[in-house]
Length: 210
Image (cartoon, rainbow, N blue to C red; front, side, top):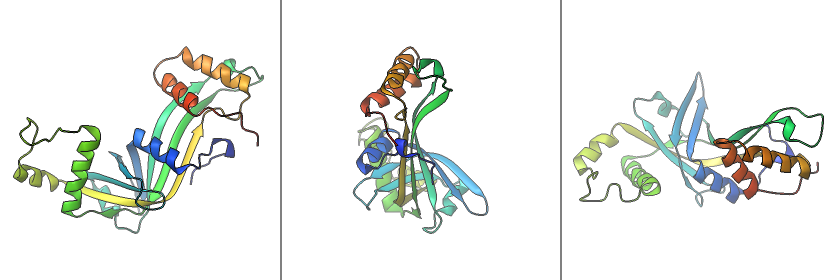
């Protein structure tokens, strides 16, 4: 499903779940007679199924939901930080430029949710991203009839994860000296470079030996 050399594999489902929760805005892709791609936040239910279950919704006007028939597979890609890696940061020479990044791929066969389950999903989504936003009496609370009308314009789905693969290409195949040089190089950069540096620090391991 995803080319993943052994140095970059992450077999720990709990670690993959934590990554998916942190980077929950996913690219979802299905393919039949034609390909469909959507970008949506997905909620993870980690204890439903051996590898967890994902839940989300799309606009009813988006034809992608017609692929969610419980038969056709859906690929969900969770993107983490990424950064250019200069060969000038390595002690080992010669060397070439590369890119460090982290992604998780999940595959399952999505099925549609009924209206009560969709309503519960919206509540769970609000609770995840902004608790209290739709609190009764609050300025953003929706009357029930308005909420019911809006629910008609979206389609909810869920899929139990059949395949789950994580690729964390963080320079594990380089020597300790090269890894230290990369950390120093990233520290001088900005934006995603610092996010990559944090991920590398959190997942620091001895250099991989094939």
